[in-house]
Length: 309
Length: 256
Image (cartoon, rainbow over all chains, first blue to last red; front, top):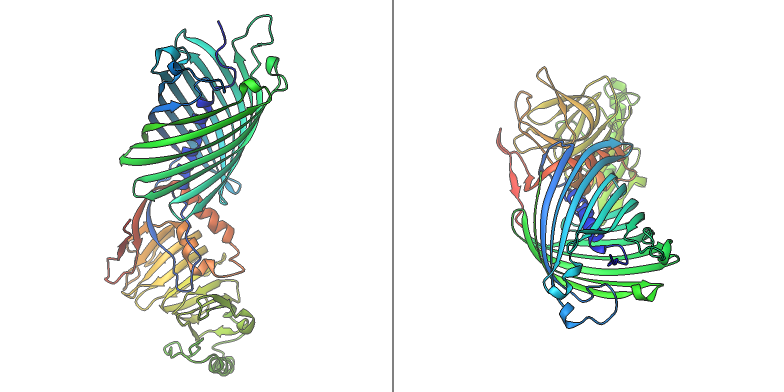
């Protein structure tokens, strides 16, 4: 069997990142801020419903139809036959429990699973259709100054649909620190530094440097996300990230990658629990091994359904 | 120009600061000689004095006015652009909002005729009494709360921190930080009560935001708000207003 993926599958990780952001956003909602008080201000007394809850869950489904400029994640010219619309179906389930006071902050534990299926509509390229499955477990510590520290583990794998072969799997302990800024009641900015180490298992080619662990890597990076509810039921989200990966095994020994990404989306919540949106993302990876460098644009339409309790 | 007034509890005519000082001095002499307002007894002292200038900036005049005493039987009236922080001789801190009428009746006993006050009450065995024009509440234990006189003559109490116990007609009620309680006029009893967004309140109230140094329990207060934010299930567009009739109160709807 020929290995088809020469780098960790980014989609699963990005999806995991979005889940984390969704949790952060959920926590941010009650954190409104306003301008400085004047001498006349008794203070706003907003009525809220309070429910002391120590557990919760959220389940969701996402459908995307997108175009991708570099389906093979390299800078080689793409044959016309490989220019294909891509359908991506994802489902996730997250649970959280805790909300216990610890020192000066709040402790919360989360666990979740996400499955994503990626299908290319053109037959010529459907041999890279795949499923990715991700699970995570993490402990989050929130402080009153809007700092969030997370310690967790993530495991994921990628299975090609054509032959039901696991191309790649990983297990990654991870740590992150985030600072959240509120701008009024409708905007927030999250700045997050994260670091993890991925222990990986890929298809090997016997007698070569294509070892099972060749995708083991240490990763660190900075992520920014801005969210703005600019009109009722309309949200504009933007994100950017800069990430450094260092590989140390097999054919990738001494390989260094730097990835830069930017993205934006506009979502419309047309019904409770449902939204639809347009999004675009740019990803640039520079690798010390030239063949792994690439530019990629993704753009498309997405539909989300989510329910929490 | 009105500044700060001290006179008989029943008389709240505004006076100039110089006259106030003179009146206060004379009153203190009378009080000491009569044994009524013993300056070594329970009293309040000005700790912070904030004014708003013509440009709307908040200016501290603490250096000029710190140390002025308010003795038993005396009253303080703040004009619309003035806030004060007073500290009692046994550690309670009160902050007077703008346009507030307040008098010190006795040890740990005050009358709030108009406006709003913040109370920081450290641990004490003795109850603290707040009289409004139409009702009275008695508080024990410790914490921070804001009391506002409502149009119906009762009180609106906002619990901000700590474990505050309210004694009303022989019944005890533990106030929950992040909850707002109406005390209707008449015989003291608990009226309607509901949760309010504590973090938003702390960020928008001049009684917390304008004063430096902050309260000794400022950090605990912020942590209480932070804790509440985790358990807010739903935010509404409703904001609590005044209570004009005996049982009901105003809710203001914020349109999107």
